[in-house]
Image 1 (spheres, rainbow, N blue to C red):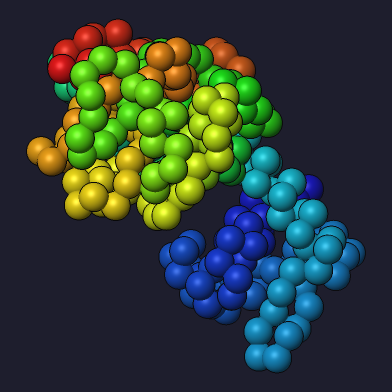
Image 2: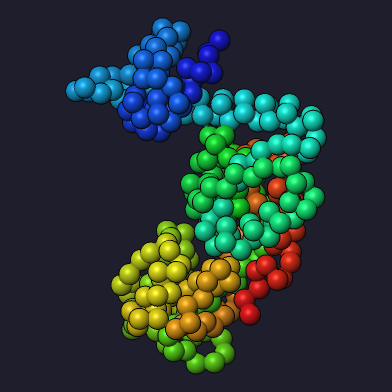
Length: 297
């Protein structure tokens, strides 16, 4: 039977790239990590590590085992959480990942609800874009995530998601006419794109409008994007939550008809989930259902 401590050492090496960094991540001494890795090779009868200069790297067998080990550790973590959950919600810790504008808007409202109903429940918050959040869920490094997706984008493997909010998209510029957004009016101008998923959706919206946008700048920081717009470097498309979290005084927004993204609560695997994770998921859904927490005014 494979030892979980040794699998953790292998996964840490896979994530960090060096034995010393893996030891730092796990809080072990470097000799301890090296010992676990040697024992793992002996137990499996496989060559998992290859020396390269003064360091090591994983062999193909090592890479395959590391990926499986992430799944094993995630399941073991979930089993441990479920056992601890037998004591109910009198105490507990939930690890939550959220994308930046969700972390700035829906998460504080959800934490306020949890503080009211489950004051002894601790939530550790990590900021992560949806692809990274899915990786963290599969690796067992977070328990629940607030994510988003645009129409037509594939769902991540082994992740169960429930839509809690339809977030409208807005054209953001320095000087825009009143009414709904007209993307074609900016077909010859410069555009500013966001994260990879947001860039894909921007290209899709512009293609539907009949043009290929000239993207002059790109940033996944919605505060920086608005500052660029306010300085006259172009226009952009931003979701409502980003504008609730922060709207630069030098920009205006106009709704893009029919353009939205789905904000989701995501977990690894299928329900039922431990009570503490369920409580966080319900609080996020309740926060999303409250217009005061996400409506652009």
